[in-house]
Structures are given as C-alpha cells and as structure tokens.
Image 1 (cartoon, rainbow, N blue to C red):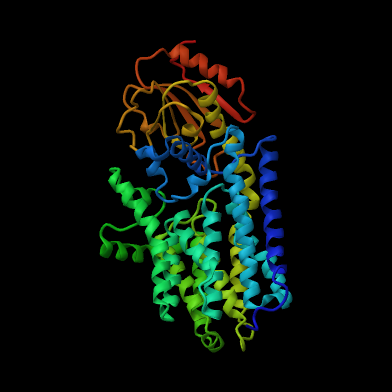
Image 2: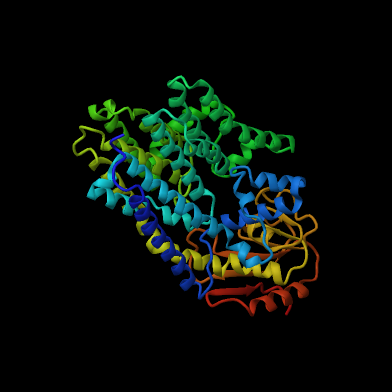
Length: 495
C-alpha cells in the first residue's frame, strides 16, 4: 500500500516525546504547587483505588458496593492491585495513566504513518502537536481510566485502517474491540460500529467473534450487577452514562437538548467541529474513492452518539476518546490520493481544540492538585492516622481507600440510609447531615475549589457522643495541616 511510506517509528516517537513532556510538566507543576507531593485534580482516582482495594481484598466475595463502583469501568480497578506501600498504591493510577498516554501517542503516530504523513513536513507537526491539541496529557494527569480507553479506541481505529487496506483482521482491532468496552462501557459503541465494515466484506465469522468479544464480557458483568441486587442502568447513569428506560422519550429529550449542550459545553463544540469536518470530507470525491469511507463513518457515528448521549467536562476526560478517534479518522482520509488542501479542515479543528483545552490545563490544573492536597489529602490523613472507627461521608472513595474500617457512603444513599455504626461524619454537602447531628468544625481552603464539589468539609457527630474526644482528635490532626487549609471549630463545642 503506497500510503505506508517513510519510517514507521518517527511519527510515534514524536507523539510520545511531546505528549510525554507535557504530561511530565503537569505532574511537576502539581508537585511544586503542593510543596513536594503529587496529588490528582479529582477524587476519581481515589474512587478507583477504593474499589480496587475492596475487590482485591474480597476476591470473588467482593461486596455489592465494590461491584457497583466498578460499573462504568470493570477492568480499571483490576489494574490497581493494592501493594504493600500505601503511597506507591496511591500513585498507581498515575503510573497506568503514563502507560496509557504512551500507548495512545504511539497509536496516534501510527495512524498518521498508515495514512502517509511520514513523508510530509506537516505530518511531523501533526504527530507532535496533535496529542497536545487534543488534551492527551491533561487527561493522563487525571489518574482515571479514560486515557487507557483512548488508547483502546485508537487501537480500534488503527486496526480498522489496516483491515480496510489488507482485508485482514489484525491484533490491534481485536485488542481494541475487547478492551475499549471493559475500560469504559461507552466504548461499546465504537467497538460494535468497527465490526460493521468487517461484516460488510462478508467476513461473517470473524465479525461475529469480534462482536462477541465486545459484548460478552460487558453483558456478563451487567448480569452480575443485576443478580447482586443492583440496577445497572442507574449505576451507569451515576457515572455519566445516560442509558434509557424509555428509549423513545429519551431519544427525543436528548435530541431536544443537543443545541444547549453544544452551546454550554466547550468539549461538545470541539466534537461537533470534527463531526462537521467529517461530513464535509465524506462529500469529497477523493475521499469517496479512497475506500476509507467506513473509517470516517465509524468514528463519526461513535462521535455523534457521544455528542447526543455522553458526558463532557471533568478535565475533558469523558469526550476524549470520541474526539480523538474522529480527529485521527479525518486526518487519515484528508490525504487520500487526489485530495488537495483537505488536510486544512481537520487541521483547523485541531487548532480550535487547542484553544479550548490548553488554557484550562495551563491556568488551572497546577492549582487543582493543590486544592486536592489542601482538602482531600488532609481528609485521608485524618482517616488513616486518627480515626480508627467507622465513618459516614460523601467522600467515600478517598475515605474508603484510606480507612480499614466500614465507610457509610452518604452520597450514594442521599443521606436517607443514616450513618449506621458511624459516630463521626465528614461532609462536603451539609444537606446530607441528618436532624440532630452536631457540627464540630469545618475545614476550608484559602481559594475556591476548581474541580471539587466544595472547598469546605464539615465534621459532624451523628448522635449524642463525646464531643470533647472528637474535638481533641481534630485539634491533634489540625497541627499537621499545610498552609492554606484552615479548621474552624463550631462555637457551641465546649473547649
């Protein structure tokens, strides 16, 4: 195939180099901002660590709560096997995100090489700056499963491109179809759509096996959730995956809200821009004659599905797979034989993506790690070093990971289940406190939280317990707080 020209390693190396340097810069900035300790920008990595802790500790006897937490990403907690050193375990999501970033960048460069960019000067620019524009490093900084999901999605796209050229179902396509849904359930859309070109070429057996690889593990996991007494749809919706109970009404509602979503969500605007580029390219004669129409169609349909039904925001991690696969697909077909100047279209969309994602990463991500250090890290220290008892909280992930005792998740039960055996509660949302609970103190940060639900955490007694004991405990913990975190004790607590 004439497109596969130039050294195969050059574009992947450039993508890894620039994406990796940007990621290391974010990590280093976070360490500097916290005074020497890395922390994530979100609670989500600690949620995954807590799930992993429960799953691996229980083995096949994992609790209903552990299974519930893993609903949107069944595989990721299994990658976070607890290790003896707690600090090393805390950093395990960062390590996996670094691995995911490298794989995703390699596949980005490989797709460009497959499309024929290795012999073009602007191909070097796209390989180096494409991952930066699309926020690979920012999402890898989040510590969540999304960068690994992106890598699996790009594996699907690269494998599909190889299939369209050679007619062979290769390892990348097989691995991507299997892993994408396991890393994020919304990956099922791209995985199923990618099998359609295989079926269209009458590779019925291979296509059905690929579909089974995509659907089988997820179907089995959702059945396990239901048999455990859980509602899979409700759990997935709680993690940003809107799934229908009334498909007709749901489709109408999602379609009606689409304009507002595009206007209010910058990430949706980026995805919509690439969808427009894809439609324009599909109308171009060179693209239609290239044999790569299925590549853009698959990525475009998956992107449209996410635009309609998916989530956006949270360090732009939710939409990354859809936007990046569509960007790679449009770039791949923009240099089809006979095409002149078409590469400007996805190029302009990439520039637009950079203007959306880069300012937030530069201006806020560094201090987002500091926000976590001033609040969530201190709550985990309180839990680990001072509270040897059950706790009720709406920070169930961080507290659950730090504690060896039962944790009552007040956010999941919306405060209606009570505190159980917990005598002490820590809440970002004071509305979850039941009548009769006594406020002992609050922890506040010196600046508004950027990606946390609140910059204040309240400490409560859940009943008629000894306030003096917990006040003394909080004062002992208070002595280790970093600059910028302040504890204020309630006036009615006797000193």
